Length: 378
Ligand SMILES: Nc1nc2c(ncn2[C@@H]2O[C@H](COP(=O)(O)OP(=O)(O)OP(=O)(O)O)[C@@H](O)[C@H]2O)c(=O)[nH]1
Ligand SMILES: [Zn+2]
Image 1 (cartoon, rainbow, N blue to C red):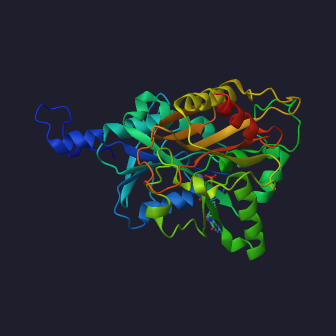
Image 2 (image 1 turned 90 degrees about the horizontal axis):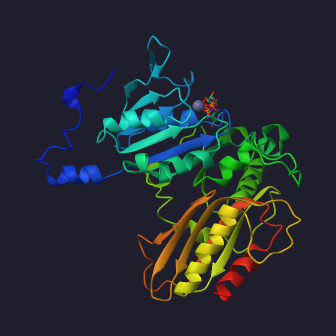
Image 3 (image 1 turned 90 degrees about the vertical axis):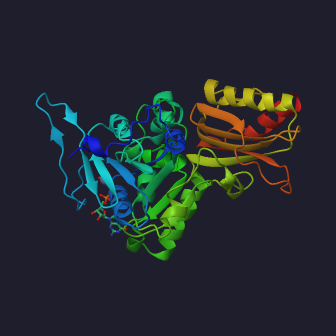
């Protein structure tokens, strides 16, 4: 059933716009992308969120009808085969089973019913590469005017993840075959490297030691992500842990990333580079360095590049500028942004900046030296 007109949100354009309507319009709806390898527990998590008592109106967009959904569902396909998304009222929210992979049109149709939801959750297919999807909600001026990307949550199947990470069959398509340097990068790697929260699900199926090994491997790939261990995707503290992530306008988890990086996973790792306070020129040098690394895939300082091409999946940073300013760096693949920290750190914090990179082949070249040289010579 569709929302019939009389319960559509009040006409937001009318001249008699009251203050809260204006605020309502300005209020963007957070969207979280839920990804994770086939069968990891994405639908189970969404089901749980739809029925848990958190008081938020949540719209869930799924890309499949899992029979694990114990909710009556229907999809209206009109005559010429074009599927029309149907919004199903459930529990404390509603579900749309968008047959299109990214669910973008489902979101557009959802935004017409704007004001109805506090939160949108989009389940991707098990083989989706969130690096392609995130920019859509982060920079797409069409969608970004009504929604903002709150974060990426990756479900990991504790029982099978280590096998998926080492399984060449799961390799990411489109990677030049010539790049046969070292182990294969799988979809599981990419879903972990882009995650802001990692839910290690199906913990009931593994021993304590196996769980520990999974945690260590995942942390070595992505040191920034918050990790929660679950069974049946039941995240105890949904509010604090899954809803309201602000992963793209805050970097408070930067401190989690230690200096340098561990080599537990040969394919993808996290590298964190400490930075002193910057002059304005040095800030410009950091911006130029990021452009070279993210757009040209060139590491300034012409170190021997006979090694494999590196690939940056995620960049997060906090930069202190000598004029007292504090900047934040957010990046997904080649898209990045350096902007004023919305919530500058309190005065007493040591003005120590940090840039954290998550990506592939970060160990073959000296990123830290390259960046520090670029800053020093600025
Ligand atoms: N033993 C166990 N089974 C689980 C757990 N979480 C989910 N499952 C089961 O695993 C199967 C897959 O769960 P889903 O939630 O459909 O996984 P999914 O990621 O949505 O799967 P796809 O959308 O097909 O990629 C279902 O039968 C779930 O009941 C868990 O923690 N432990
Ligand atoms: Zn699913």
